Length: 410
Ligand SMILES: Cc1cc2nc3c(=O)[nH]c(=O)nc-3n(C[C@H](O)[C@H](O)[C@H](O)COP(=O)(O)OP(=O)(O)OC[C@H]3O[C@@H](n4cnc5c(N)ncnc54)[C@H](O)[C@@H]3O)c2cc1C
Image 1 (tube, rainbow, N blue to C red):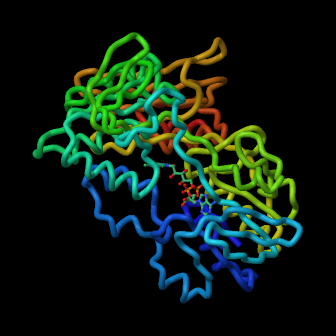
Image 2 (cartoon, helix red, strand yellow):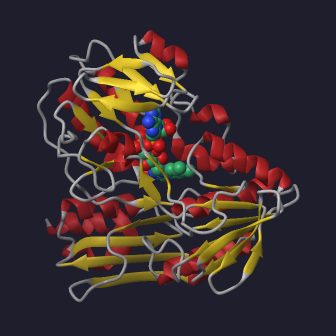
């Protein structure tokens, strides 16, 4: 039984069905009403760049054709590990041999006054995106809390959606001193800010939320900052981090920390229960991007089908921003340390910036803004730990220039 029909749960299901020793019966419980969809595409959908149908991964018929018992709009409420049964919110009891928790995460809501008001929301699922689309039609001012990947995608989505209509004014509040401070250095963050402001977003850095104001009817009408400033808002989007949905596992007595603790085989403290995706925690780490989750799926699918294989291991991730017209690619440390060498190319007129961090001629990190075509090649070289000393002068110009020099040296 898989609990959670999101990105991880669905991908696991697809991997199990493909396997020659697939489990004989598979049931899936998902509390969203729609069959699995591509959550990543919520941002382009909000921005009006893609249709709703493009998000659907599989329709309900597909599950039936595969012999999968699918329960949508049902929330798994309790797990009886001794009897191996899951009880849902509607009181159904379903037995299992092996249980997989793929319950994802939810937006972290700051503990401030007014956070529960109507018009204050996260950006996580179809309902959130639909509510934001409605807000973009009627609202005049939106405030997005969080200048990370998700916050910027939400802000740009709202701005684009309302373009040509009333034109919603969208302001992004970022606690830190720069946008995407977990991925970008000051130069790249500055270029990004310039471009977003040119498009019409207001960006406020060093801005800390103190609370949301009630319009007297239970709806938000403004946000207040810690420094006393007041920003009128009829829509507030909170994109300031996520919290793993670990409660179901915790209530069932599984070992949990921030997430449900798993080993390299995605097995919880109960050998019959597994967890993967954003609800799990491995070696103290929790997840927020799909790349590591896809690798978890491969490991767990093999395990559940009785195949041997390597366990899950951490690997660095690269980050991209899905805002059309802005290309950005980053991985590795943001600030150089004493052992790093820094290679930089910056063309301010064309908004093109590349910064590589090297140690012993090996790429440790990259930040690319503007032309990001070389990003995946840098990432590949970094994962391979390749000595690039022979093509150092050509490195900033990508594989085309660097490869011949490497081949010559070899
Ligand atoms: C707007 C947006 C854009 C994103 N863009 C990117 C991107 O560009 N690149 C990237 O790598 N990642 C991106 N992500 C992150 C990515 O979507 C997540 O990493 C991924 O969805 C995690 O998969 P998951 O299955 O763990 O969680 P989810 O996809 O959230 O699925 C969990 C599912 O479990 C259900 N559930 C929870 N509790 C229960 C219960 N008790 N009973 C039944 N069902 C339950 C939830 O309703 C949900 O349907 C984005 C996320 C968002 C919100």
